[in-house]
Figure (cartoon, rainbow, N blue to C red):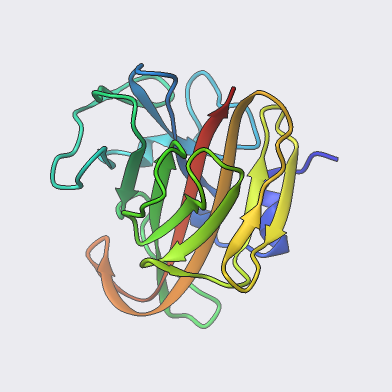
Length: 215
């Protein structure tokens, strides 16, 4: 049975409005990368998700965050011309304003995204990394270390959606359900003060996605 991403949040992800959305990258071959904000289990509207205007200047890069790609805004996504066919990564700390949590303290969100599964290295604070190049087992890493028990959602090309829990090494085996684009997502809440959106937050929700195309 298909479930919307918002419903899956009840199974383990946080319920704040900001974290009900994902940022993800799509790329086909050596075509420009497309960056989306929305609910990936649902079709992206032609005019973009209602929250899409909040996605302004994500940092998308191939080799190094210090060399970000140039961005062009389209109707429902942001386009980035990048050379080569390697994996791409993205980080954005400025999509949603901090909000008050249940305890009244401010929370913020940082989005991470990756397209491709050809590399087994990590370059994001929260990243879903293939255990072997182009394989179907993935490790959820926080600052390079496994996150045992991490919750990960898999959305297949038909938008069939299922939630998984990582083992004690932070690894999940995702099912291969045919050709097309897959999207995996996870989150990790981290306590500690930091500045987001010009405000000091008491905790930060990190949300990360990985997309790849199965031949």
